[in-house]
Image (cartoon, rainbow over all chains, first blue to last red; front, side):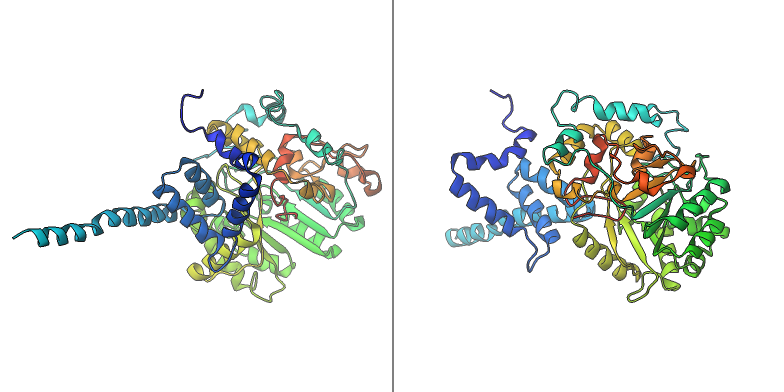
Length: 111
Length: 351
């Protein structure tokens, strides 16, 4: 048994999930491929969104993959870090906006 | 920041034999990764053979005003290898009789060869269809004596191909040296001013992009779009096409890969991205590379690795296009750099 939960080498084996369910695996990877194709958003914009989401869900495989993908696309360090702050702002904001709920409750109960 | 060539630093990797050893040992010797010869044999493409010659690429010397971190030539101000006028005369004789449609001058900074202008003058009279000079841009700003290069190129209808690793200062200067970005921008403006790279202009100006690190270039067309948008919006600069070139694991880039502990991962990346379709169009099959001292190679990379052509004809003085055709190309594991993804050549992607 390996000593850590994550192994960078496992990222390359992502496709193996189809081995145990080919139909759903294929549908997922077809969908995945289609999502990242150029559309109303460019491939570059999608890559930055993926990087921000990767940090939000804290997926080490995704961070590895989309940092490399961003470098290949010529995405700069400044752009990458700004994308992360968007993720962090939404994440922090999601906690803080619930403060309104807290305030409503306090205001209702408090004399 | 690199300031001297591997040769000047007396690095182990200045020795091409040492580079070839590294490329054949380790992960390739242990068969963790297949050797290039075995890989192309899978699709019956071994041995790779040269076809009709289309591009004659002449390296007029390894001297350069820049010391780029990734340079496969190990070029720099300290390199003394410069093509003599005598060898240039032999090249001119070959240019007169070759069936190649493209003449491609490279270096180093080709403009630093003292006979460069004379050679361009003579070669342009022969009337080859596409006459390329690979100019690093900063040379135009390096010294007053180079300031008229845009006009010189224009008067000889030279096709200018220039390196531009990124549209932002940080990435460019990190790879090529402090100040390179702003000087390159100034040089591009001067080339635009005489008509180079302008929409509808016949004066061709193409840019070369190679990644500033241990990763592959993205799709050439989308990179070109990004470069065009950024250079136009930020600097009002125009150019025609972008060539996306993969860094090959030799010379200073190999040195960087090893020093940064990226060598094995990079070789895995190249092998995983192997594309048999790209093998069909690799440049060594339609190109011949001539070194500063007149010897013949399948490509500029093989020249730097001192892997000569597999032919009775070894030198420009004994040139014979008929005898050179169909020769088996000299290969090693660096060749994976030209077959990764969309493929890579001095003219960009090949698929």
